[in-house]
Length: 306
Image (cartoon, rainbow, N blue to C red; front, side, top):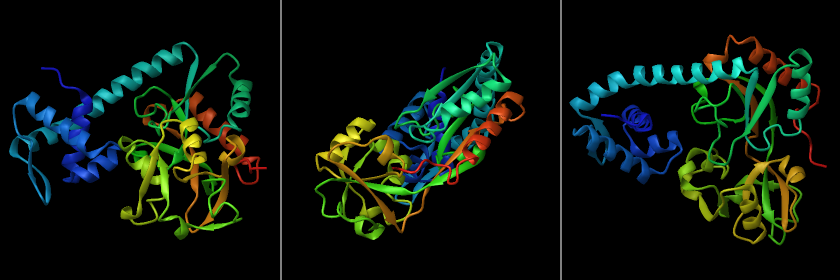
């Protein structure tokens, strides 16, 4: 019998949280989709893994046996995948770099130039993560190191070096009543509809609606966007507002959309992140140092919108 490792990861999240909603948030997937996957795993195994009640999800006796064995199995499989992919890239002298959009776009070309001074024979293969992949391939073992926005799901499993912080601003339709203001209080934005990423992005979607700093029941979704272009088009069309890094006002200016500072909500942070498999790699370590050196030369780390 072949079992998809993704089902086992979903199973462990529910087993550890004993709550479907919390597990879905941790995995950044939709709760109904997670429930379906757990049922699929039970059907494949032919056993009931959880006792379901209003209080939550409790492991059955067979579920406890599985929960004891799965972590070691997954850890071993992850290590095999990472080492296999990493060895292939080392042999080809390729450093696989992941980056989420806008995390450090203005700095990456200079970081790569500095890196090439010591490693001119190495190629940097840049992978841009999409809206639904906040680790830009790190979780899948597809990159050796990544430049990401913090926090992201599962970040405690990685090594990281914070590079800079950047304020969260609000993107508004240009005819919005608050668009003329030079500074907006976070509390004034609680009742606004938001242009958000799809529900299955879970935690990532919540963070960019400010739900890390306000009650969850205040969230109103006005439209769904799956790309930056869809997001800007929806905001310009008046479907909602959205939090965004301050630098977006410079890198993604769009007619019909204005960007304003917000006080009362914390900043987003940017870090260079790498897994255990890369910890002792001298090439990765040098790349991490390049990131710190290049970004450390600017006063605030991020490029201020002009």
